[in-house]
Amino acid sequence: MSAGLSTATLARSLRLGELVDHLGPRTVTALGALNAGVPVLGTEFYDAMDDLSDEAGVLLIVPSGSTLDVAALAKLAAGAAELRYAALALKCSDDDAPTIAAIVETSGIPILRVVERVGWRLFEALVGGLLGDQRSSDGARPDHGSEPLFALANELAGQFGGSVAIEDLGRRIVAYSSVPGQAIDSLRTRGILARLVPESPFNDDQYRSVIRSDDPIKYPQLDDELPRIACAIRAGALPLGTIWAIDASGEAPITQSQIDTVQRAAGIAAGHMLDDIRVREAGQAPREELLRTMLSGRGVAGSELVELGIPEERGAIVLAFDPGAHEHPTTLAQLRSTVQRHLALHRPEAATVVRRGRVYALISHEEPAALARIIDPLLPILDRLVGTDSGASIVIALPGRTHRAGGVAELRERADWLFETADRAGARADGDKPGRVLTVDSLRPELLLSRVRELLESDDTLLDPRLTQLQAEQPGIAEAVLAWCEAFGNVTRAAASAGVHENTIRYRLRRAEERYGIALGDPVTLLAIWLQLRAEPAGEPTYARERGRRNL
Image (cartoon, rainbow, N blue to C red; front, side):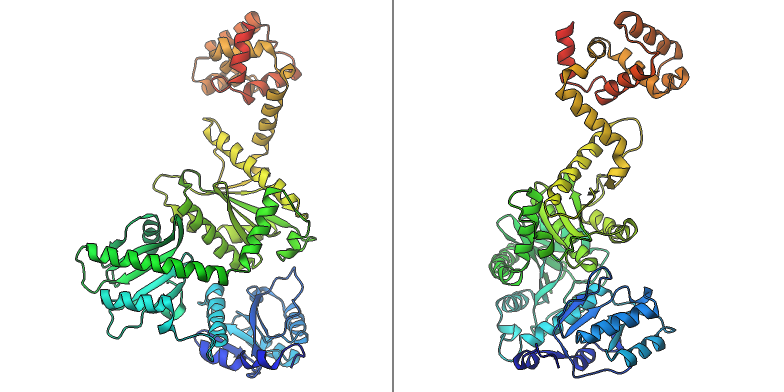
């Protein structure tokens, strides 16, 4: 027994044997001997790049367990045993199970095998729920029926005749009704058992509509899902969650009485959920404040990365999410919640905030391949969040890595630069449009041109006045010169690009040389001409046109 564990702590802890029994063999089984009496005080995700925390009683979740070789797993088990962890939890094949059972015998730490079909997020939620229920027992927390949100759910169920669930923005069921005889379907039953709304082909569109609607919405029966009335829970414009009530009256349209009832309940729920957020997320608010401080670049103390659990030697990366045309307080709140929930599955230290119409997240540095494995599954989730009927989609910027807290603001500025450059590149008729994930490598040519553009705007002496005059007076000739430069002097390709005859290109090139004195034979001059025309193509510039008029 760890000397750091008090008698009171052990008394209210959940024993490992109890945890395994509660989860059941369809969720987890023990490999080798099980020390059923060891206390489980919390969970932690294993990260190969970080040292194990010195906290006895931890259930260490090892998502990468199936990829570790025997020596690495044995070393991990020995280290966890030395720190008096409760157990390891991992997934493995039937062939590897005997080997892992042998590691249990040599290390002395229990290892739990999680079944393949159970995701790590669900497993952590199940364990966390059991730990929470255990710690809140013995009079520390009243029965669910007397808690305000559970009582509110029961009251609604009594009026609608069907099961009622109150959910947060992460689609976790925070309260549910338990009225005898209430109508209930399999979707609600599974959600209550897991305390998390199961995946459904209808969920994403429904949640998007409910959160954005000012009035309750009634959904008809869909497959085996009974008719439902849904309403957003808000504190002012801030969305907090949703209420879902199965309507036992059937397919009849929603009535004004039902609207008034569920809206009143949503107002009551909002007050309780705000109080719960203040208590439950008391530790998260300082983390978000640390990230806001670093993103702003003002008042940075220098220790913020360490305080967030990000080793400075490993470094941090910023992920920026731009909803584009979908920017809306509700969309941004959902986006932040979705991103935080997804990233936390892989990087528990993740912190996420909304800032000026975009969502910014900070996690420990990941190599490109590992980062892609985190981001790729997130893209379809984000598409379902905003809908893709318009063809628009949320774009992600990955500006790089920093080892300093003060460097986070620089990454934020670089992310904004990537978004702005991608917008400009996407608006051009030539070339490929930028992808969904923006990086410096993918946009380096356009980034260089944007810096050239800034340089030309800041220093008039770098502008060739003859080109400025040409753009202002003869934009068609300027376009022909640009097309010719980009075709490396090939008239045929330049004509095809400009959509004119080859003789037209030749004529316009002669006019540029004869009337404006633009030399098209010198390579260095040609590069300068191309940079100025490409940085500010004809039809785009404002400053160039104004200067051109002054030079006429």
